[in-house]
Image 1: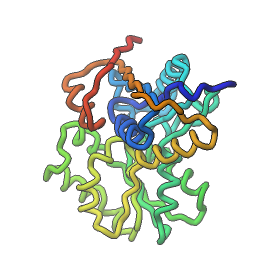
Image 2 (image 1 turned 135 degrees about the horizontal axis):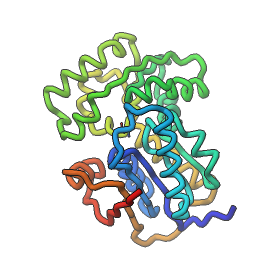
Image 3 (image 1 turned 180 degrees about the horizontal axis):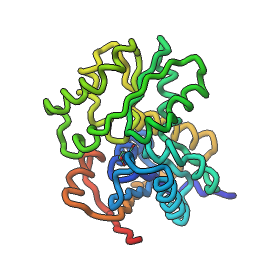
Length: 268
Ligand code: DGL
């Protein structure tokens, strides 16, 4: 298949959280066109069954492939945890996922080979991060913890709130007790909690932001396959969502770090 380097990168997530990945991509690859899909009508995925997530994921991947994307990025950790292989099987263009990117970042960062992973219940129960990390280094010790309250707290904007700090202390206590030196932020929402999580974890724990890791991996793949957009004009950014819920604009802009325009609603 002939892939056009000028084609957009397709990024998708269960909602607006994947905009943390778009933000990292915009900063790392400022000339790439991007199409984003957020399933805002059906979010959250992190507490849904594997079958349901797999069904939704296929639907979204097919939608983006019809838009002639040159690369698919699964920005949602939960989707990547349970349906990455399915997306790879149906896609003619390369597929990258945040879990693999986070695993590479964690293996590179850890000296003590003791890594913590935090994410949604579905991501943690799937054990996908441990599998991905062990593919790169079978001797890594992984300690994981589901943090279901972090997604609503971030959406509420309580990024430095005392309630969030207490919640983080409670969730992280068992993982930090394992003497880890690296912790993977295995959910789209967690990069926004980075300052607070760093404070709670202490300076000796390196946080791996899977959005940044994803942007690095994307840059490497585009260079390797000669798929980088050579044009130096202003890129186009398009956003597709399945619903425009209350406070969509505010929350979306918090994740993206800039104003959110060109939003289209898809009715399924
Ligand atoms: N995007 C999800 C993730 O990265 C978090 C939100 C959800 O539960 O759908 O796991």
